[in-house]
Length: 86
Image 1 (cartoon, rainbow, N blue to C red):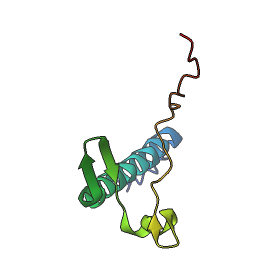
Image 2: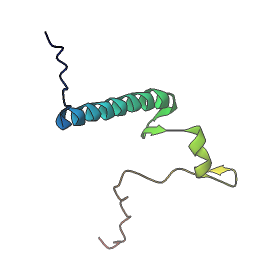
Image 3: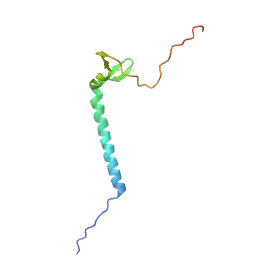
Image 4: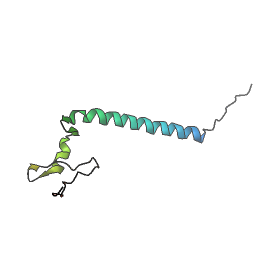
């Protein structure tokens, strides 16, 4: 009886899905790490929820006085009305 060694060619589609699965798994693990790591920096206030990250606080300090970070809501604030006659 002859020794049959069969060479199985890896399908490019199968290799693509393995790589895609690996990247997806890495992204999920990264998301979970970031979520649980930054959980201790979440601050709940009456106006909403914000992140207070110590190593980014230096970006918002000017001459030792803290300033609030720029608004990120994307909605413009309402301008006061200038119509006094009505």
